[in-house]
Image (tube, rainbow, N blue to C red):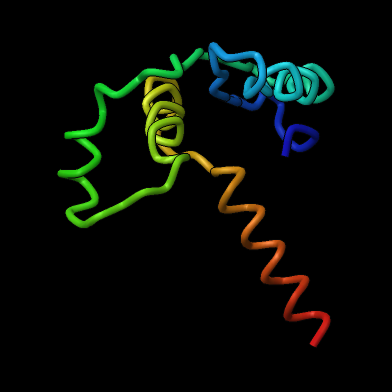
Length: 103
């Protein structure tokens, strides 16, 4: 995508204040490699302000540990773009494509 665009592609990632879980350096490496317009925000390990919001949005019991950082990265992306592709969705797409190709 970056190779086909005249403008830098916008990328966003969430880092964590706990170094054991912070993978933002890897995201920055990819951003540097493809010369993207990269934005990063750090999420605190005790970022529980969203619990009520997420419960209202999902409207059902939901215990995915990625819910808070996923919501935060969507907030970050929305500040700069209208439509976004998630790395998680892309991974799931290619995994399904590979599984179909192998059958």
